[in-house]
Length: 72
Image 1 (tube, rainbow, N blue to C red):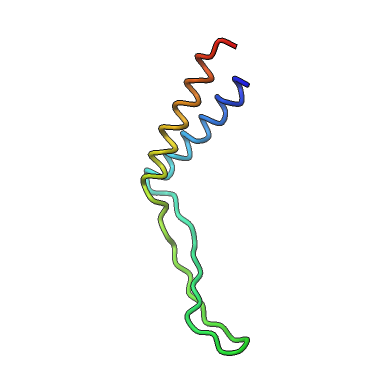
Image 2 (tube, rainbow, N blue to C red):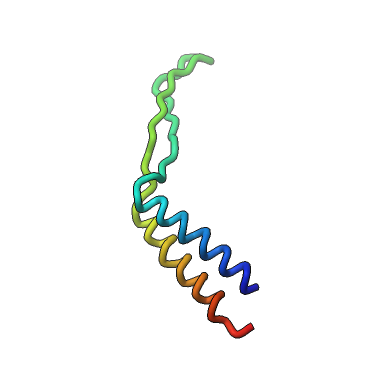
């Protein structure tokens, strides 16, 4: 159980740092016009909100520290 907490905490910590330092984004596809079976779409790159990264850092650090300092 300790190893799982430590690994999960480190993954969240690294993911949170990645988002906070501006590398986290996802692609969103919007349909602009659809006539019958023909579609016109646009793809936009959206940044992941910074609060998600900060939350990942905090939760990841707490999980990793909990795994390191647990008695079992």
